[in-house]
Amino acid sequence: MGNQQSIWFNPEKNIIEAIDQRLLPFENVTIVIGTLEEAINAISEMVVRGAPLIGVTAAYGMYFAARSYLGNNFQAEMNWAGERLKLSRPTAVNLAFAVDGALSVISDQLSDSENVELLFGYAENLRQREIDFSKKIGMFGLKLIRAISETKGGESVQILTHCNAGRLACVELGTATAPIYLAHEAGIAVHVWVDETRPRNQGARLTAWELSEAGIPHTIIPDNTGGHLMQHQMVDMVIVGSDRTTINGDVANKIGTYLKALAAFDNGIPFYVALPSTTFDWNLKDGILEIPIEQRDGSEVSMMEGMLDNEIRQFRIISEKSAVANYGFDVTPARLVTGLITERGECKATREGILNLFPEKRPSNE
Image (cartoon, rainbow, N blue to C red; front, side, top):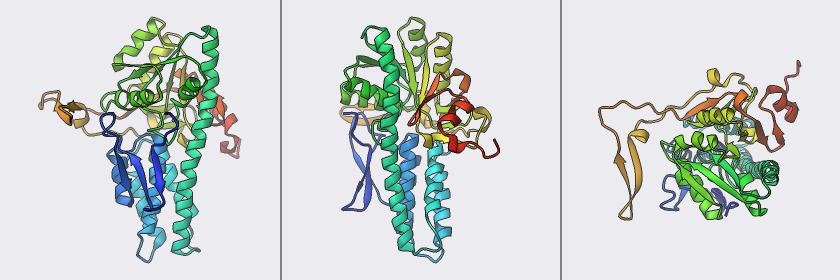
């Protein structure tokens, strides 16, 4: 069901356990993360992925680094651990947010054991906060789905989403999928168009798996199908997640999101971005110029993975002579975004709209 969790702390073993997302939907395997190195590897290799979940994993990674510390300069060691975590994936702002938050709770005035305890508490609190944020995002997004359902006389609301912004990308419920889960549980008829999301197929492999587990009607489509569906009035709304959103409302999300926003804009279809406040980058204004876009290994494009004879295998799909560019994300300008759905409510994707929801982030000189 939609409320199952993707990461949890095992108090008996003093480690965290998480779903290995690389193996879904073929195998549902739990992996163990109990050291800084294991946290870094899990993030960089996309064992865990999705901005909120990356942040939570990084917070536990800082705790593991502190727990194993044996030197004589605790602060320097933690700064080093934080920088290594930040380099594991550069685009998702939750990663840096979690690391900086962890560093802010420790102090030279405390003993190492006291700092370790504070870091554990920080990681646990961040994990719970992301769960709470997802529930609130779901409630605000539910209102939007319910309104469309009422205009359609109860006919199924057709929702298109891109990549995976569900519980696998968060901890529980998700961001873009949270309103869908709650609508389904409320008895509102919904159907989800699931973009396959090449090159790693997070939509086809992860979002579709989640929706299947929850019993929510859905259809997997090639990435380039969305525009056609919108032209033929087969999509009522688009909901996606975000890996980083600027203070002016520009949204970085999985590569291909920008094209969906353009198609939605051209066809008059509302395009919503669901995100917790931990995904805002309050220091950036121009997403296209300022958000770092991760470039990943070309093998993700040249190879595909699937199940054959009950074995997960990789297959080359292009010539070895062809060059590959593999940009992990793109930026959707704020002008194409109908609204942002956050844990505090929905707002316009504008500086004023965002700061009205989060007035504590408004610069003191304004």
